[in-house]
Length: 503
Ligand SMILES: [Fe+2]
Image (cartoon, protein in one colour):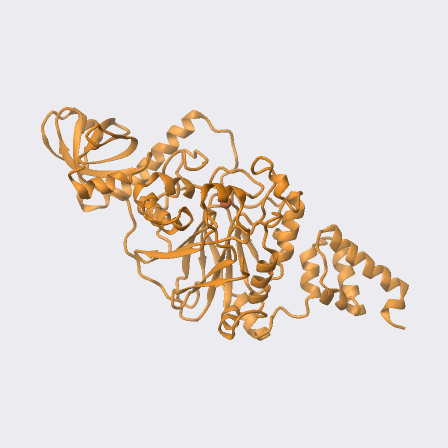
């Protein structure tokens, strides 16, 4: 008698399928066929009726092998051993903030960035602004301050208002002094800068040059072996515009089932998938969003997203952080995805959760220090596209400016220097949006257009999306390129832009 004619086993099979459906996981035909095997059915029932019935433990058991085509089980096991370390992730508990916390937060930012600036030869003997104001002599001056105002005079010169804990002063930047004027023209509110100039002796400094905290040139590290990191963002599962077919092609590629021989060879050496938020489209993110939602329930969105991501072979680590469409607070740093909403992801054994932003280290092994990757969703980027003249006037469409913005932020050593560019947690202990360590890779999303660049040894990666152009993007003139995925060869540091689907 076949299994299909054994009532007890039929009942067990039904319980397994119902358990999966309850967890919003639809079994593929291949996995249903595995339930023709009595030993598999018994093992599956032991999981779903055991003390910790996790759907992904069940899925893992049902899959016959962790190795996709083109890769041996041993190779898959070796890749599964590749290390991921969370170097920095914001860990503070949410709490009510007071006005004093904002004061402390900006003081902490000033203290940290002025310390970085003071390492520069020209600023080692920087004078406090209080002393500059008090001095009535016309003399050369070096000082460090936070910009609280930026105005244009009728002669088209710039006047910056700059402050430190000891006082406030005006800085005149003459438009005839082209070099310093160009630097000053890009300055945004609340950034911390060094100024070299002449004190007029009556409460004004004439600027000769401006110094950003900036990053030093760093060594371009290369992995001793050929291994790839895939960068994803803004998949937007749940949206009516989610490009299911394109994402399915991506999943097929990473499983070694799609693409040219070279592309499939690349897939077999992927060790990391790094995801910078907006994995789901979310619910109630903007007015009338429900009209643009295929899946209107946030739990169901995460379940469907996890079902899709679970098709990435289990030997590949998935590092998952949130964005502004995810179901948590907007204020940055955002914490890890909540266990309640994103439970199916938390249950996946190869998913590592981080907040936004975060610094992770990948591929440290055999005396090789690995790569520090700064991940940031990119919510602040929209503002810099418009308020920084050299970026706005770069001749690029607003969607193509992301690498310029990321370079700008590395120079400022801050992910969102202007107070208004993002929502933030005013932590008075330290400013968590300061770029403390110089990363090897700086990766972000949010703008839905892939791009890449490098700056002083840092690889800059802007991710695309798997969502077709939205009405909002149409209105603001964005040109997304869905389905494009940057893949970084950690051995050569070359970025391959793969394209899935034709949207
Ligand atoms: Fe976003």
